[in-house]
Length: 69
Image (cartoon, rainbow, N blue to C red; front, side, top):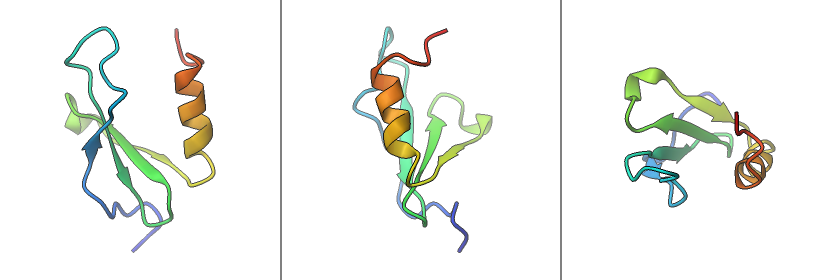
């Protein structure tokens, strides 16, 4: 098992929704304690992986709208 092995089922984020009820982000735990993230509307679109030390700063950035374009 490598560090990016997904070890839990994906769960829909309770913070998904934004401007549309159809916007869904799904998150699963990885073997190294990090997270795998995917778009439930585009499962073929790939995954993003966040190591254990990067997940909390990512969530803080999302909450602060740091990624708004």
